[in-house]
Image (cartoon, rainbow, N blue to C red; front, side, top):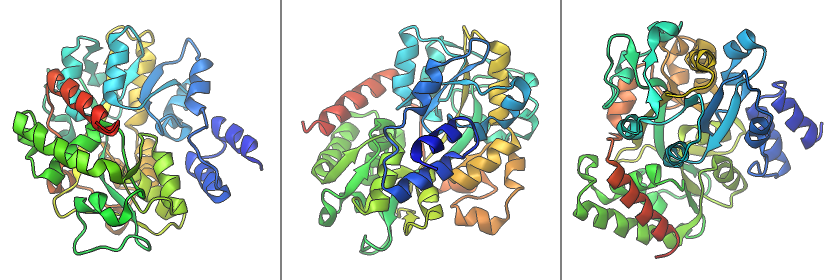
Length: 374
């Protein structure tokens, strides 16, 4: 089967994203040029919900219950970062369901662009972990919440165990190691990189908004800039570079290490001695959602055991449905860097703390300047 045939099979749900990626990696072909989401969005069905999400979540495996109910997949629209998504919606872009993370929740709510979720309309809500619902800015009123938690995990370092020579413990210093200048990669979004820079700089995440914190973090990010080969939020770019040996270490999410291990690439997802960055992401409904009933179907599908099993097994992410973890034994979960008790993971790292819109604007502006060499 050639690559065009494989791409067609993946779009039709006959081939998993994981299997498709494996075939491309084996052939030495990058995934970044595959416009799956754009093609799907261009052929949007008016009677299906539109799901505005990160790349990699626009796949059939997460929408088995939805497709069984409606006969089709939802429409997909992709963003590279949650700040980009919110800016686009502030500009008038209307979708049904969006996929932000906890650090931006209060700002998303404050935008006035979203409606509360009536959890009585979700068949899987009773199995959602309460500790993931109780987030700053997600104050529930009766059965209503702003955000339905979906996935959770960490931002850390995926590195080639056969190519990166550790000096002591795993540490954020690995992404500042001058021995590997030009062979290190990073996520491009400040929502990950700036926060990890704060951990490297020793800045408590509860004190991010001070002038002193900005100076300390900017200093370490400028120190790192000449060492970075690529900044990107297209994780397949980082994964392929690690697979080929072009890079020896990169800032990634859990899923990159899980995928590469499955393909036989000798990598490890680091547990930095300073702590990893931990996060929870979830689902919000636009106040003007044109397909409200289908919006609830999208959320219910993503909260299902079927979706949770895929997220855990194929992406290495935690899932909000407790029953998803019952599909795995503890050894398997430990091998994925997970636990059936999310508190163990969330408390082991640095949990993102929501910041103001002013902080986000200042941080993103400064980080873009640093990435550009200023």
